Image (cartoon, rainbow over all chains, first blue to last red; front, side, top):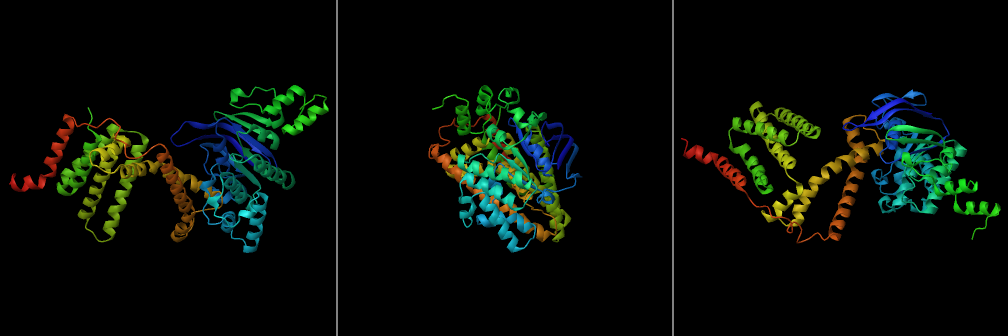
Length: 269
Length: 224
């Protein structure tokens, strides 16, 4: 369980970034963290990971204040996948790269091998295990970042713009796996994204930040009802949600939308 | 009226020589002048932080010299000289556009533009490198990296930060080189810019440089 209570934060040389934020994310939730660029999304998640500490207020992980914690103390509870995958790559093979975090935990070689293989398979990277990580494409590097976080078996995953640079198929595969993890193993997912369709499809709850204020905390379905005007927050309704509101249909991809439309007797070519 | 980048570069080189040629009280005065100038040009938090960091570094250098058996006088003057030389460089960076420095190096010092560009790019890379270093440290911390423990453990653990940092710097320089070539970087770079012509103030400063730089000569043969 992650909680922030009346948190205020400002970077050393800048204006306040977060104003009086209070929210809690229970175990097993899937949450989209939305907002315009610079709204404070990444900053808020950095507080969860103890990468920064609030100026005032408190951040609790499983009921414990993390004021005195370092990120390494939370690494096996929370997996954090950064926007830029290059920052994390340091080993000579994809396999070793995923195993890096596990080696920090000092677990047996056998377990490391097993966990790495599971993570690589989940992200569709098993065939690249022996390759040099920097030779991968951008999308593959992103999945490598997710695999490295998954290998640690965290109970919470914070994923910062992980669908960027992925093709449709890769994105679908990765997000489906994460959804399965969330539903079957009750891993908490926190998805920072600008892709509204991804948020709509894969999360149940949304938090919207606007200029450092929490302006929405509620159901993703209600947020993307196709009618609500999201422009004042720098967001927009996904096209399928808007169309769905017109026809009274709820669908997450074009094919399903067309099928449902046909069932309603509206011809689609 | 401002002096050109050429004169400023000569001045920085001259200061490097003066710290060894001039008597210590004059070097200390030079430092005061440099600091006043630096704070006049730029008095933001970054400048104060740079001065603070330089002071700490100088202090460490003095302590190290003392530990290795140098006398207090030698240690203090060594530290002062280093401080003055570095502050001159900070003055140059605070008061001159990097582009102008590169142009002066090519135009007046006849440095090949590739080298001038390399030098100025290295300067531009510093803040980028610092930001990358902090981001990499954060990214590795999230995977369990910790720099706790004894010095050896910390040094070994720091490899987790250094390796991606170096690889990223190489990749960045490669991309930058490619993009510069695509933008036509080459023989005409810097030459199409407005030439830097010396003005009266430049000549006054250059004269002052000659006078001060020849101090040992006129101190020995004229003042005595």
